[in-house]
Image (cartoon, rainbow, N blue to C red; front, top):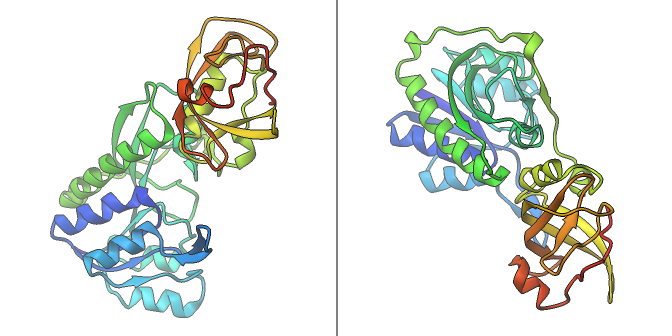
Amino acid sequence: MRIVFMGTPDFAVPTLEALVHAAHEVVCVYTQPPRKAGRGKKLQPTPVHQAAERLGIEVRHPASLKPQEEKDAFAALDVDVGVVAAYGLILPQAVLDAPTHGCLNVHASILPRWRGAAPIQRAILAGDIGTGVTIMQMEAGLDTGPMLATVRTPIDRKTAGDLTDELAEKGAQLMVGTLRELSKHIPVAQDDTEATHAPKIDKAEARLDWTQDAVQVERQVRAFAPWPGAFFEHEGAEGMERVKVLAAEIAEGSGAPGTVLDDALTVACGSGALRLTRVQRAGKPAMDTADFQRGRAIGKGAQLGS
């Protein structure tokens, strides 16, 4: 098929690569504009932009698709279908309607649960048993379009990073399979009464709340690993510091919420306790707790901020 691909982060790259490997003609890639990043604040192209250049595909990165000239330029591509994966910009109706078969989206949840920008993190925070990928026919509403195909996976103890990588690969293969037999897929309308919403992650949400029970605090750790990184603040010998928690496990113990119960960084929660197993000081590499504690240790009895 003749395809235009629209995506931005690492999650979208496997779908782009799978379309090319399946011998589809990806005539153009749309992605968000380069943004300043790193210590030098140099403009950095998105992961999809970089992948498209490696594959020799034309890249466009308009700041918006609302101007008429952008709608006309999109329509002029004359494609069979638009494939969208975490693009991050609103598609006007004229863009949705331009491809012969419209635009199909790779969404990282089983719709209608977790419509929105952060379905993976929200599923972990809610304690969902499983999640997956939905291929959806796009329409004007936010992730409200009819569903063409789904694939499921258990969440288990996976982090958001783990699930993102897994669902990116599953979504890529599901999209290729859906396109292969597009005429055989019967769109299934979503039940709006069962919809839940997954708003964008606010970095403030990553601050660990020790007053919650240990199960919920552990979910915070997994939901925000690797980004933005669950964290706590601690008044140490060199002043207030912020420490990210990249991995943790539920442990036995009790005490006032936020109290360090032993030298292995087991921390009391509102109910139960959490043992921190991988942590990172600001500006330092991530390390296992045993190595962390051999440096400027946080000792038993310390009170961690929430």
